[in-house]
Amino acid sequence: MIIRQIGRVTAQLPWQLHAGRCPEHGWFQAEVISRPPREIFPVSRPGGIARRIVLDDKEIYAFPTIWNRLDTRQEVDPFDARFWEIDWERLGVRPPTMTPTAEVVETVGRSERHA
Image (cartoon, rainbow, N blue to C red):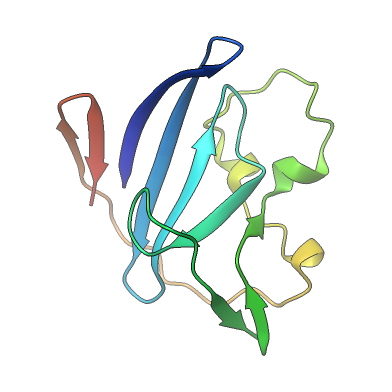
C-alpha cells in the first residue's frame, strides 16, 4: 500500500491518496479527506487513470464504500476499516472470494509503502 500526502486542497483539509495492489486485480486507490472514502477506484497505477473491471458481466469503474451509505455528518475515524468495505449490495454484484495476505509497511519520504 502507498499513502501520498496531496496537501491541503479544500477548506484547508489534508488530502491523502491511498493506493494498494491486489495480485489478482491490480491497483486500486481512494482519496481520504478527513473522512473515509466514498468510493475506491481501480487504476492503472497509483495516481493513474481509472480502469475498468468486469464482475458478473458488469463493467465497474468505481466501488462504493459502506461510508457512502451512512450519514456522513457523523465524526468517525477515517481509517476505520468498517467504513472502507465495499457496498456490494449497492454495486449490484456478488463479492469475489479473496484470500487475505500479510502486509509490510515501508516509509518513503513523506509517503508510506505497504507491500
